[in-house]
Image (tube, chains in turn cyan, green):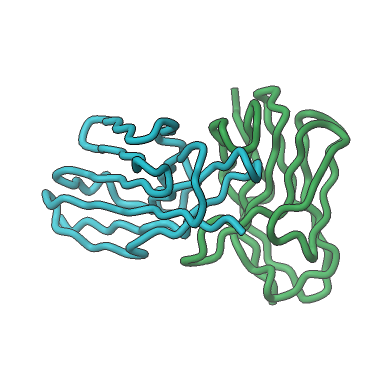
Length: 111
Length: 114
């Protein structure tokens, strides 16, 4: 069945360092969504990518969708303590009609 | 708009007890979902609904039941609580199709089964 794997599971960085999380699907995706969950909070939608090779930016966050539409990445430049939380990717498939969430990457930022 | 609301925020159950987790949305969304989140395991879909009167199983439906009598409400029922159901439960909604629309999550219900 459709699976979405996310790495790493945890990442600790010093404030100001960069951070990247990767999302890989076992099948070709129609779209990929990214969500952020602050500690003790609920997932909040960040962005959706639908086109092969698409790159979108939100301030210090850069999102990419792979050319084969089977992988994606989220890169944060110069992390801040406000970036702390768990970042989830969710892959959508028109074949299965499903949106499958990855396990998430939990980011800790040391001030 | 309040968005998606869930009650209770936290509950402790004894093994074998039953309870209903409430979920309400005021965005007039057709699609609603129940997820459970276990540490390091991401979000697993329990049940979903595409509209009033229509529900379907997700990845991990065993031990749960749902109903959707109105567009706004989507309660989740646990009939015989088990320790394996200790988790954080999130309700979510979206305006359209399951895999292409933004999902809006409620604040969650933390459930501890002892």
